[in-house]
Image (cartoon, rainbow, N blue to C red; front, side):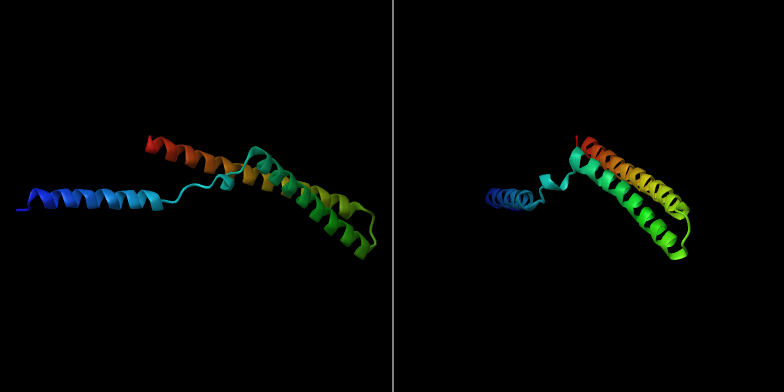
Length: 109
């Protein structure tokens, strides 16, 4: 059998270990979370990038082939569609991350 002094020492050791674990636990960084403005800018940039890339490809092909600006218009529309698709994918990714975060908070409560 162990004497009460050893039990007290063991309890104090366990408390110190638990306190050390809590002190070393990673704390969530505030700057890692996106604000609404950052998310909006991300989506705007994705849309503009899609338009710009489509316009550039279409303009380049029109210059190369000497055609009317039909390829420029066509590829600009394709770039718009690609930009919108990317925006929707980003929105779903953000929504899923927020749902997972909310579910994690509910489990802890």
